[in-house]
Length: 362
Image (cartoon, rainbow, N blue to C red; front, top):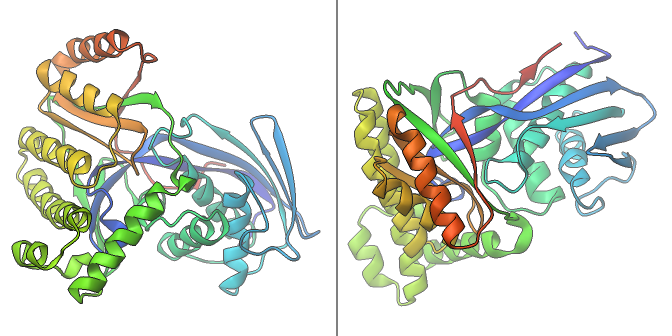
């Protein structure tokens, strides 16, 4: 049953582990955050999207909407309407007013939250009857084709499919997913927003994806998910850059599997070592870390954290730290001191809890 208006929410996400594996048909393990983007939306039948966010207003006619025809933040929203139409689910228009408590550029997937809150609102207002899983490729199409960012499905899947108190184990190749209990006990996951802004549309993200595709081509496999013998694969690649990229993707998939095993066994403390290994791989093999992230992880571990790593596409944004709850004040102080010494802006801190995926509020 369609609704004329309402309020919807879609969360940001933290990817516990499994970075840059999604577009290689790999494994990811994100969970949704309470923070995200809220949309107050009303249906309209004049073929126009009227979009409001942060004092900005964009008017987008749906007629003639195509990839590349809308620029800036509005492309993520308009792209959802465009992708729905392409899939045989045309919508007639809407007024959407967005508010966010998720910092843009923090690596917590504000762009996917924007797409997903639009998708669930339009789905309900036009009674499209699409499931959350069916909305994932719609939101991804909006980001890839309309906003021009070649991401995989990690962010959209997390924003739409996650459940409270669980991480989402997603096998990107098969599309199968399962909910893994995220029981932290006396531990906490601390998000450190380094306040080094990033933008995935600047080309570096796309460059990494292209390198992975080229490595898969040279190895004669459909994707790097198919690499079974890492040593053999590395010996066949002549380009040292491609060797590093392959090493990260293959080992990161193994780290996801190991993390799931530890979570199921209730061994949350042991996940810290895997986070550290993931960060080093992202820094040295995938080369997407940045100085503030490296400093935050190092300072946190020296101050007693079990582990930490950068999250998101890289080149700026946030890191996550796994630590006992009673050590968080010491860890925050150590990171802040390290940033002050380097004359960097003071980082922002957030305790991460696993929240539900996109849904209607009222």
